Image (cartoon, rainbow, N blue to C red; front, side):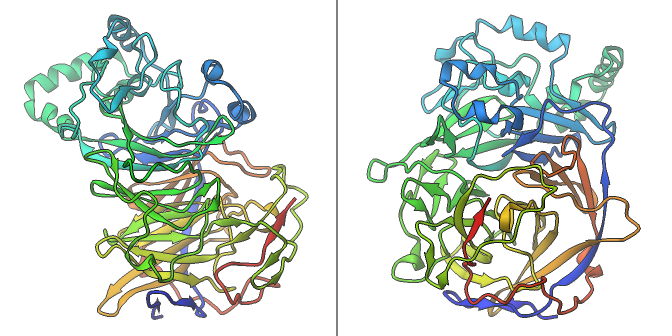
Length: 519
């Protein structure tokens, strides 16, 4: 089954049926529950201890408050900035033990003035560093961080012994980095002392910890106090330091939300999102070594006088083959009831069993794939339209890079506000003629008691053995508190699909689907 090729600027419709790939799904049986129902977050598997970490976002129960609370009242929110889940013991970790509490008290008088220019402590006014200690976040400090976040979120990985471009010693280091604290949390003190003796006899253990990776979390824009957020920043989970990404005087920062952020080495590429003028289709980037925007609001090479993807927000993006940013889905807000392709059509009715109410609004789906080449700084695929055998249009879905050539996509909000449960893989290949895209549908066996969950505004993380972890989000009538695990087979097991489309849906003539009205 040859993949579909698309030349730059072309709007291509792939008419081939997607391949099929089996997966098994299981729900965790955690011994405890997370601090709340988290949405709008990011997650990852820590390479040193294998723990599942969730960062940012907000608690669903506090969402209405979080949108309107003034700065001084935000400490009332109780969602920790970071929680981790022990994948072996299936236990959530968010609180500090007595040793860490004592270390914190010893460092409460840390001097905030020691922080370098361009960065600030993630702690409160009394020196507390929630990023390092997993304390409740926000906590009287870092008050302009978007909460809840509708920001573009991404992770930058670097070894802990690497020095940042702006040398900025952390305000607090009670007993090591955040990840070390998480790893020690809830452990037997006697066992830990024995392990400390063993490490003294084995110097290579300390060396291994020094080379372990700790990510920097990037927050681009977002929604804050009922307004679009201007500031973008990075939080180093290894040191607890925070750095703002500054704009050039000639190119001021545009407040935005619901964009995607993709890290490529020391650069972060930001695509799409909402701003005061509507949705955008610009690709912007910042240098993470200098924390400066490079092309804020400036068109990329082939955008000048050429074609580019449709403006969109609430889409997904991922880096494949270490070179191509693959963008899929999303939505574009409508300003009237007419489209360039005719009158808007009403979406199908919402499932009466659904318990989630989506605010009434009109918009257009962007059910296509776009590919950006970071080496040549241009779009090589601007609109590869999904046919009626592929995934239904959606926004608010989640994605993760399953392998160097696979972007795993799951869930989202579809027509009529339906919360979707299907999972797909976008496969990208490269040859002498350019890049090629193909779809693979994830299916579960009828004997599998658990199927892929319906979910939106959630997060995916990839573990060993092609296991995808699903955390948080919203779902109609389903328990989203615990972790869901999807074990996906390899591409060698893909079987050809049958040419059967979604019921009652015709092949689109454009990447922009007919407008839908959510009720």
